[in-house]
Length: 559
Ligand SMILES: [Zn+2]
Ligand SMILES: [Zn+2]
Ligand SMILES: [Zn+2]
Ligand SMILES: [Zn+2]
Image 1 (cartoon, rainbow, N blue to C red):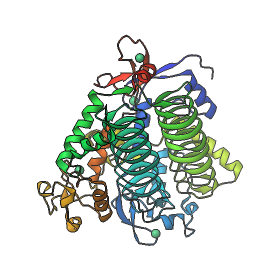
Image 2: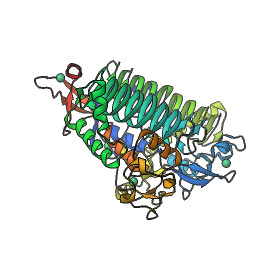
Image 3: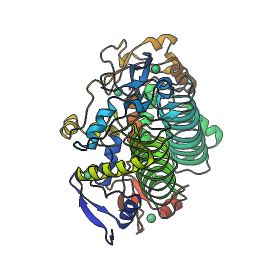
């Protein structure tokens, strides 16, 4: 192939035009796959459709019969093993091996295999008393939290690393302690309702502050103490000011929450994107990377494009939640430690895999599910190396003729339904749209309604007035009407941190934090500082109200 120009194509999913650049063609050539037929956004939606991160159910293990927490609803036609059974030696995935039938499509046969091979209930490793965690590991007493690693006593949180005693946080990268409602922060202690903090202590309602302590309702601060509403006070003066607030009161907290949203919107300078120590790269929340484009929530990348929530990768494209020494990866979700692998889902520590799901420590597999330490297998059946290579080549040719090769697994055969996945948050669609596309929708998502034992207006306003027996109440979410309750450790946390009882369910609280973060998309815009002509790629859409500055104007403006 000798391609010299970028090419415009029409996305086969959304019908919008998209461009395939020369560098993209070079990558496809290197890994010998045809160029994609879907646009970058639709490709990400297809990967979102395979990630059920936080919709949990209970279901009996199909091997030992014990009840286990799982991401697969009991009504799904799947074989689900608890983690102990799945990782145990009591079964062998090659038992389910079958021949490839050249008279049928690959995905049709793959779906059949999927309904027979046991699946892991969810993804969790080395954790203690943390059953309700998924895509997580090395946690202790962590509850209803997702993508959390090395945490202790963390509740209702997402993407929290090396942290403890915190609740309702999202994207705490390092060393968080005693945090409540903090987002995109690192090295923070005893902070609440804050966004983009670094090295901060004892601060509340702060936006974009570094190396600060004792700051309240302030933004864009550097190396400050005792700042109240962006004004410098003496220690005594600051403490007097804070005393004016009864922080344990729900009514007070609601006013402060709205004031904080207003502070971010009206009275703060916004850096065009969070980009640190990168060379020739564009994206947001991107760190220590080189030649990486359209990468979000990612670090230590080199020569990559369209990566989301990924780290330590080279020479790769179109990935979602993958990393840890991975190279030559393409169209993969939820995997780590891969070399030269494409079109995979939940595969750890493998080489030369294509179209595999939940395979671990393997080499040279094609179209396999739940294989541990296997090699030269196709549709879970073992072959000799020479046989394997020849058959794989023939299947790839067959898949090219059916238009299947070169594309990630279609959402129509995902083992989870769209409304259970991250697609439902990042790219929401109606039930009708999803079903019209032939994708799936779960109508029996867990949750009870109408069982509340206390009305929202009867919850004591102040945490001081909540008695020990409050944990026996069933509450009703003021947004979605779903019932929820307060667990004992949670009540202890609220009391210790002077936080009132929430009126929304954990899911709606997650959605509020989700709404504060920026989308994983970029727009080309101009710096809003008067007179500056600088342009940049930013996750702030043009219609947004925030003051968005280029790097140099932003640096001149922060205090
Ligand atoms: Zn599209
Ligand atoms: Zn079991
Ligand atoms: Zn709710
Ligand atoms: Zn500027």
